[in-house]
Length: 338
Length: 292
Image (cartoon, rainbow over all chains, first blue to last red; front, side, top):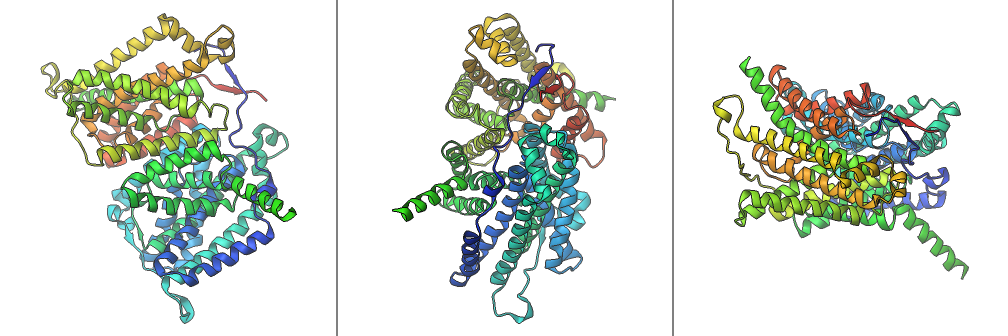
């Protein structure tokens, strides 16, 4: 309203998380791994399916975490990348007859490209603008998928049915259990990749951009390159998660990938603790099991429960599960000393 | 030619609604530098309140006024309770807050009024306007109400002490505080007014898109597109942007084959991304300069 140009020192997009605080220690990782390997042995097939979905959403939340916790950019459009990954896998399996395991790298690469390209305009956007552009992307995605031109490939509104793979080499396990272990292997590989990525030169560049973009560019970091790279990597991992999701659910349809999914993933990240990679699995558990409980009470309640819990997390435990973990650690330390 | 004029006029009519949404978004953006992702849901909820009042037998304009007061109070309450404590928080926390609000309102509206489509009455009727076949009385009403609203807002901001105080609080909060303006309450007032403007948009568009909890998603995206096109820092820009986007949407839908209602949202997406890339400050906005 005044003619004077506004001068702004921008508030930080995301609170800085030190690099060491982003991962779990060696011991805790091993315990977690053993738990994840043992889990399906004792439960029924339906619960194994839910555990598989838990891992898949954990991957998607992890991807968002790299983008937001790592490089300080927002995305409310992760559902779009998830959808592209799911459709890539489904189309390759059903139309090209490709092996399900081979479709995942393709889904990852396609989404990396899509994310990298979408990241190009995102370079010029910061904070709320990026949130806006990705929000629009997420709302537009289902309509794009329904488009008549691609109907031959995507199946239009009806979507595509995907066949569930059998365990290979005649292994004596059910389809669900095999898929669980397959997903677990992919998840572990991507988790290790992510941890190393954040420890690497690129990871340090991400964090420098997150903490102060201008200082980072003054230190010689190619801000444009690393911002789009973070977007691409995040989209790529989400795409792999989407591909796995398509295989696990055996079905892809446009209405499975609405803004609600994007909100869920975002919520999972906040609950798990922004920038704390192991928190992804906590966040994922939250977005899978809370709606189940809420829908059990009343249909349509899950949104309200999500929202209220999100506010509680923001106000009471702004660092999400990481904060809870730290408090627990301190308590255990105190008990040991006594 | 007649088709062309017809589409332009229809575009201006829907553009009026986008202008209202954009104006609501810009009012909150001016006050707290954040985009309210829940703006559409707030408008949807207000519209449901109006519908409920009419179900209870309140006449249209009575329900309209009560809804405005309710929305105004609701907007202030939301700001005081939920977003005032987050004023100093990082952007991420604020975005999370808006997303949470979106989910809560959408879900609660579904719980109270369920997800079936409802008819919403129009006070203007839907016969041809002034005997011409080009535009209906409801569309003319939409344009009329919006223009009246704009005029009122213009007078409020230009000629009243309160309007001046709000402008001061938005452009230079520190200085405004020094001259004794309660900037915190000005922000709350901005929220209340944004909620009320959104409610007007909701009640005007409801007869066209039908009343249901997800009715405002498309309108909100177009409102965002309008706000971005006009420049997020300029209320006038938001209004002009709204009309432009409305006309653009209709012309593209009519003249480019294959683009019908199915591509409504992708067009808004393309528009938002294009504007942000080509001219991030929008048509009327001020470019933002960063201090190192």
